[in-house]
Length: 275
Ligand SMILES: [Fe+2]
Ligand SMILES: [Fe+2]
Image 1 (cartoon, rainbow, N blue to C red):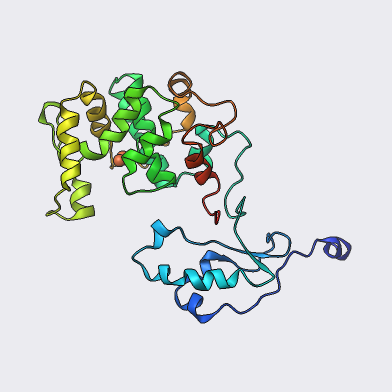
Image 2: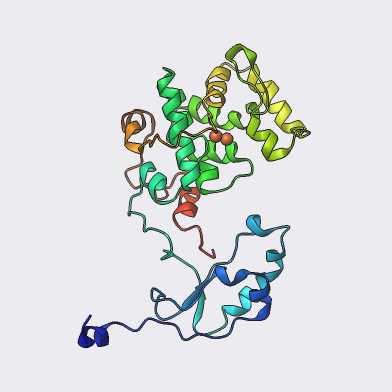
């Protein structure tokens, strides 16, 4: 780079000010975009951790200190595109969330589950449900993920697909020998061998067993695999045909179609917005 080019480069570095010890000690420096070349308008931006993410942890005590930071003239809260995330297209489709937002582990899990369902010769409703059954874990919230995930897709898929996604959360805890489904080994690692699902999950399981769509949801759990083959890469486009026939992509883009769940997709587009 020549000196002349260097001189023309826009100056975007934010002059640093010392972060208070309360934030440094709580390890919250990472929530604040420190002076960076990509700082907007020469201002640093703060990400306020969502309450659901920090409740019950020491980080929840630092909300006041983060609010104080915003009083500095060179500091604002994060709103809009976070430069640390890939920019989403104006009218995002399901594929964009897979490629630009979902965590790599969850993305692989979803794609491999859908692939196994297809190899097992299952119908498109089951394959579609497998493809998106954990999207809440992938991009939104893990607790109650079956319910969040079902709501996310409900306006765009067959009612049976959304139902199967919702109920897979409860069915995962209970064996069904008729299809060779046993309690997941992974859950013994995750929750300990003595874990007992709460009553509401037990009731959900009992009710789902009586439902006419029970087997659709059960087949989601059967193909809900945790053992990944590291040599197999599954591309989203392998399911472009299934998605095209089973997911009604809104023309305005997910997040902007005015549906009752549009805000949930927008939360994944701009997950760090203060409000
Ligand atoms: Fe799940
Ligand atoms: Fe899963």
